[in-house]
Length: 438
Image (cartoon, rainbow, N blue to C red):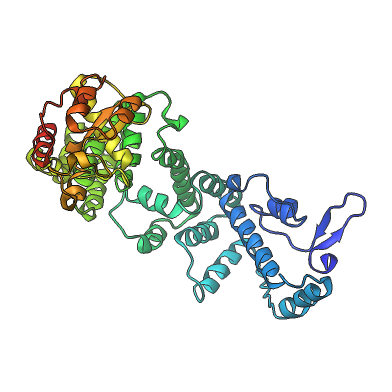
C-alpha cells in the first residue's frame, strides 16, 4: 500500500522517495511529517497552510478510524482504500507552457467552482503579471507577508492597508480595485514592499507587548486599551498615522482614537457603521499630507466624538456586567481611581479587586432597598462598583452596608474611602454614578 500510493522506502535511510511533491511552501512539512506519519512538535507553530494540511490529515484519519471502529482487519481496510477510495478518485493533469500560465488556469478553473478568497485571487494575479526575473522575489516577499500576518487575517489586513490610502471599499470589491491599480511587475514589487513594511505594524496594533513598540510606554498603554475595546475599525487611520507622522504624534493619535472609542463604543454604544467611513476619510487626509497636525486630525474625526454632556449622561446610567465585561469594569474603575488619587495603576497588573457594593448574588441585608425584582437592573451599574484589596473584599462579602463602609474607609483606594452614603439604595447608586460621571 505504501509503495503504491506513497512511494518507495530506502532500506538504508528508511526515507520515502515520494510520488507526490507539493509547492515550495509546504513540501518540506509534507515530506518530513505526513509522508512518515510523524506529528509536528507543536501544531500551533505551523504556518497556516501547513496547519490546514495537518488538520485535513487528522480529519481523514479520524473518519477512517470511526468507520472501522468494530473491525480493524487490515484486509478490509486495504480493500476500502483500494476499491472504494482509489478507484473513485479522479485527478486531472493540465500541462501548461510556463508557471505564469498555471496561475491563469488555476483562477479560471476556480471561477467555475468554489469561489477563491481575496488572498488566493491576489496571489494568483500578482504572480501571473510578474516578470520571470521578478517572480522568485515576488514569491519570497509574499511568503514573508503571509507568515507575519497569517492566512486568516490577510484579507482584513489587505483591506485596512488599502483603505488607509484609498477610498472606502467593501471586502468583496477589494480584489477588483487592486487589480485595476496594479498592472505590471514593478507595480507588484511596490505593492508587496508596502505590504511587507506594514505587516509588522499591523500585527503589533493588536499586541501592546510586541517588541515593535520598544519601550514607548504611552503607545503600549493605548494599544492595550484599543485591544480591550476590540477596536479594529480604526486600523486604517492608525496605519496612515504611523507611516506619515513622527512617533510622538502617532502616540497622540492613538490616545485620541482610544478616548473616542471609549466614549463612542464602550459607553454610548453608538452604531459603528459611521466610524469606518470617518476613519477612512481621515486616513486619506493623513496619507496625502492634507492633515499633518493633531488638531487637524481631531477635526477630521470630530463627528464621532460624543459631547461632554452626552458622555456624562450616558456614563451616569451605564451598566456593565462583570460576567461578560470584567476587564472593561476594571479599566473604568482604575481610570477613575487614577484620576481621583493622581495615581498610575495598571488595570491589568494591579492586584485590586472589583467589589459589588450591592452583592452580585443578592443578600438578605439589602432586600429592603433592593427587592429581587430590581436587583438585576442595578447590581451591574457602574455606581455600584468600587475597588478593594482582595482580603478586604473577602471580609465584606456578606456584610450589611454600614459594616462594609467601615472596611472601605481602610482601603488604599480613594474610590472606596470617598464613599460617604449612610445607606445604600438605588438612589445612592444614582447619586454616586452621577458624581463619577462628572
